[in-house]
Length: 342
Image 1 (cartoon, rainbow, N blue to C red):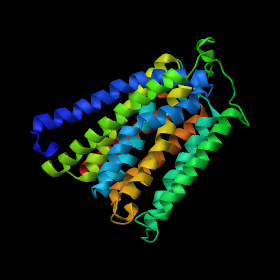
Image 2: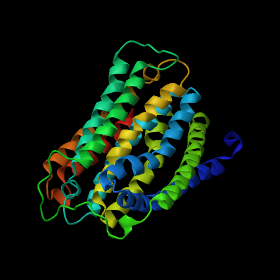
Image 3: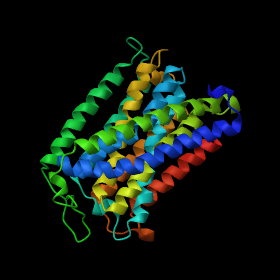
Image 4: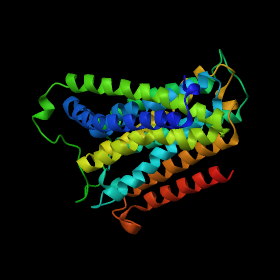
């Protein structure tokens, strides 16, 4: 289908799918905030599970589709490259929130816990890659462990959100999670949830288009699959996270913004689980290269820096943003430079 398109039409299809995903995600952000209020789920948890999972759908379609077609490196780098890019988006959002460092204002125990969980989840593929090359029915045991850890972590995150055992120090810049309109919280969440589900379906369809055009780029132009996955499809399918994060910050839903990124990244680790299942030539973790491992390590490093920033809660850093945001920008820029020069 896409192999018959001319180069201009191929690029047009790729960009159009990306633009639709971005446009739809703007509406999804508003609905996620409404759902958080009406279900009393809380912005951090809604951002991590509802919004994070929805905006990640186009990316997971990309990874699973190309993994099923035997492109292990493409699938893996799309997942871990997206985690690094999305973490960078919080640094960009920090520049938008002028009053105080975003990580200071959006203090929330659930976000801290999800960041810890993300580091644990990212360590499991490294263990798989360093261990023996085994697979049962084409699936590495670590994929099963990763999925179970994600489920357990999500449940514990909900408990942390509902009944936190500690609370951050309240300051004049702390933004509390509360419904904007008390009457809004009493309305039914059914309508927003159904509309939200429709938007999610659109994002999933666009993810399939992006996966097919991205794979065509690899074959037609002789590009490295890891490069296309980590810097092209990963960034494009991560644009909803950028849009939803900036939109949430402008709306004052700071916990939703931070939780959406961290929760979305946590959900993105499931890309590897589903990609391993879709990849039929053995263990996905042993079919990838050192460049893919490099992006996995970059995502883990950036998550650790973000976690440090959430704990430090610096009010203001150099240039009006937190020191963790400066470090995130430097680390990601360095990773891109290494990828392009490799």
